[in-house]
Image (cartoon, rainbow, N blue to C red; front, side, top):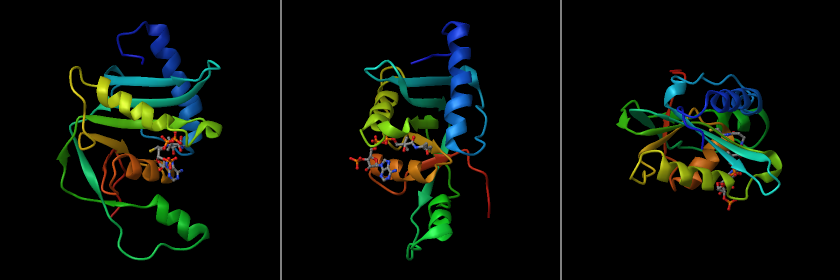
Length: 168
Ligand code: COA
């Protein structure tokens, strides 16, 4: 875990790493970190001493619940992609504490529980002395992978999101 008060060289190195590796792989321009002084970065280091997972968490005050999508799932191609990209959420804000600004796991190491482990760690360390519930954490503008993960992790498709670009 890298905290804002850690030595400058460490904070700088990790932020460069996040920009160059994680943001690049997320495949689209992410919203820049609103307040780097309030972010905690978690790195998952493998037995081979490689960074194979990264999570950036920030303080937030509110988030919005993803609404379930009624209707059939388009079967293939661009439609399916659009379907997974798009989601709707409630216009009613709910109080929340921790925003997951970015979560990324190295391709060959996916589906081994690394993201789950990182989010568990955030929940127990983000706020001193308390274990955050899944109703107190939110995901920033989730990708299709992120949506599948969050639905499973929070045990509901109606998990909390924040930081999205509003599109009516
Ligand atoms: N498809 C379907 N279910 C998925 C999934 C996927 N791509 N990724 C995770 N899940 C669900 C599964 O139910 C999984 O449990 P299982 O493997 O026992 O079935 C559960 O979530 C836990 O997954 P976990 O192994 O902890 O996730 P991961 O380490 O593979 O990391 C991501 C998940 C999203 C971080 C990873 O796919 C990733 O880095 N994607 C690219 C970056 C990205 O899109 N980040 C999300 C930004 S919001």
